[in-house]
Amino acid sequence: MSDFWYDLEPFLQQGTLGLVNGAFYAILSLGLAVIFGMLNVVNFAHGAQFMLGAFVAWMLLNWAGIGYWGALILAPLVVGLLGVVIERTMIARLYKLDHLYGLLLTFGLALIIEGTMRNAFGSSGLPYQVPEAFRIPPVDLGYMLMPAYRFWIVVVSLIVCLGTWYAIEKTKLGSYLRAAVENPKLVQAFGINVPLMMTATYGAGVALAAFAGVLAAPVYSVNPAMGANFIIIVFAVVVIGGMGSILGSIVTGYILGVIEGFTRVYYPEASATVVFVIMAIVLLVRPTGLFGRA
Image (cartoon, rainbow, N blue to C red; front, side):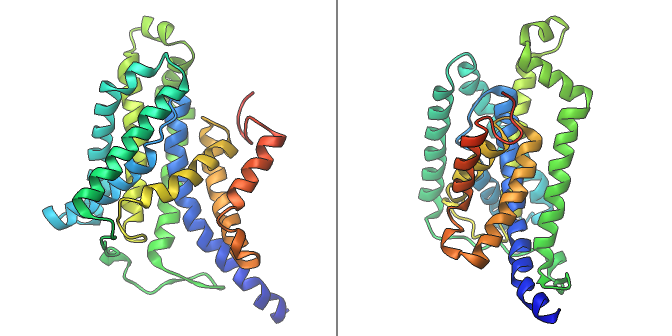
């Protein structure tokens, strides 16, 4: 029995560490799914907006003396407001056009944002310390000692993801959003400001990316390329879960993070590509994704 437990421990440890990556995949893919599902826009700037959240947190700390807890609120608001400006001035003009136009626009925006931050701060990473509240002994899970901050990431991401899903699927505001996607003219006839709802939805999706960026700042070095490192995998997560599926993005994000962790135990060389192999298999079997609608 002890030998079995000894063999199982690395499997559980890597799976748990994969859950931390899965937490980031879930939040980021959730923001993408909200924007695509509600606005029909493929937001390729999502990774850059995630990176901006981390940089705004760093700026708040080093320039204004505002720590992590304040940044968790202020950084998503600042980046979300930037998203509102982008939606009003550019993206709102593309709703009736093919998806390709939105993808090309947001891809260009991602390059501009990343280039601007690279020129301003350089390519090397900037340090952001773990908040003092989490500089405590690791959490004992029985099979490993998990740093308290990583445990916090998993918990808070789950709360945010489930809260967003509930707001969209189970509340009156969410029903208005879904109705506006299906028939905007009818919803507007009832006196609901549909353009304002669209703007707020894009801003909220961008704010989710920035929130994930603040969470990531103490774990990864704050640098202009951090969004690019995530966005390709996150798009794969959204495709596997089903484009526009809120629940699909959340569930798939966590599952793929864990699978990625397990792969590091048995075949480390494949850990960087396992997500894309799964995506190819899912698209062959179910082109709409696991939770997508035909």
